[in-house]
Amino acid sequence: MDTTPLFLEPALHNKIWGGTRLRDLFGYKIPSETTGECWGISAHPNGPAVIKNGSLAGQTLADAWAQHREFFDNYEGDDFPLLTKILDARTDLSVQVHPDDAYAQAKEHVPFGKTECWYIIDCDEGAEIVYGHTAPSREAFRQAVEEKKWDSLLRRVKVKPGDFFYVPSGTIHAIGGGCLILETQQSSDTTYRVYDYDRPGADGKLRELHIQQSIEVSNCPHRDPKLTYHVRQEAEAKFTELLREDLFTVSHWEVRGHTEPIQKNWPFLLVSVLDGQGKLQIEHENYELNKGDHLVVPASVKSLQILGTLDLIVSSPV
Image 1 (tube, rainbow, N blue to C red):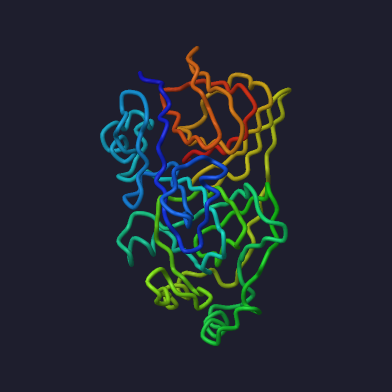
Image 2: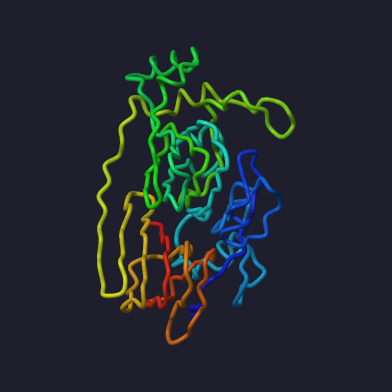
């Protein structure tokens, strides 16, 4: 069975809050000076990534999912479950919230809600995010939104490189200006804006808000999830499991030489190279890894090794 990893050409998206760091730091061919999102591992119809190598070269990841499910351990479901992005927030993103699966399926007629998580790759000194709110009940939340009491309602958190945040569906959130983030999420593009700083969009008009939906899906009161990191240290590698929950796992791999053979405990792996260069070794075949690469390691791979100096974010569905 084919053990060739699927290297992907990302889809790049303009955003009013975007900048140029996706080009400046990762070398992507950005479409404009306000490029906000790199959809590095995506089978979503709004931005599918294209396979660059192997027997499936030229197909989208969505095509591969539909026609070659054996690459993905015959994982169930009509839709590829996850999406990996890098976001360059030159300025603040809107304050928003995402629905869970049940609400998204009933109201938006899409397969997934949107639970996500963020790894802070880099950020300006003093950068912050919005993470949750202060309202003790849904009615108090509604009242604060209607009265636009944003300063007292929204919880702001300072961030630094290497921080990690789990953002389950229903969490009020916003990425602040100056943040460069790798986001692992369900394969969904359903977003409800609560507040957008009264700024115009590209057409000069205020962007649409989704107040009623936001009130309906927001977690009230907000509670920070409890996270426990699991760290495994080798002589030349450190593996930090950042998150393991019902939908996916996310880990940070730091390699400073080589890993021991890593045995399969995944249906398939999503790998993004945050920094460095090196090689992925599968059955004595070597594949070059460079900063900015995104790839899927197929189900047929039973063991792999990483060689070089590399920082990776690695995820898989559960």
